[in-house]
Length: 275
Image 1: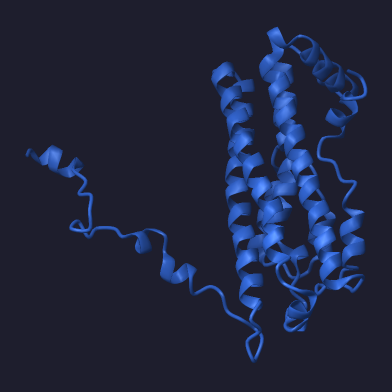
Image 2: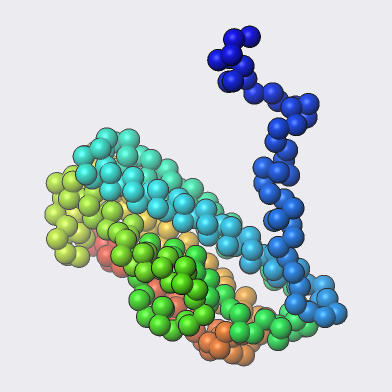
């Protein structure tokens, strides 16, 4: 075997001993990240921690996919390969949809915990709260629901977290990328009314604008699934703690119910009434 081929050779099987399942996934670190606060240990606290850590891992993956979808649309609008670029953006958003359905179904696992079991350790969580999930806010910002007030409301952000959120506030959103695609395809998009008209044009002429219509539908699906998660989440919270305040000081389910009307892409919803 030549030196060049030897460098490219990969030894599969345990005899190689170069990389193991555990070392590749950093399992010693990952499986040592669940530390209970309750004393004596509450049985269901491990479930609570695990579920929320898994959520954060999925949020990390969603950010990876959403950023890639946005950047792909922007590149296609700027003169890249439009057909390939828009197909890839739609493909990435389809993956986002699948992950978001998993997030909704994960609530079922959390609901195997009874309110009594949760109350065994809930008081230990304060002032920690899901409200403080920076990655979740990043997803909202990237999706189009930018809220600079969040940085002022939550004072527990680290400097690194503040910098991440400020960067997201300054970055283009998925909606910005979609509007850029419309313009690149010769469809007017200077304001919401023009965007709505352009989406209607795409809806009624899918022979010419199939990719645009597919992207519009993919964004709407993303919006719908985010709404489904918020609705499922608030019902679960009400089942667990009723009308109690949140551990982070929020009004609990009342705050969550106030978020239910949020829409990332109200223009796309309005178009349904115009088709």
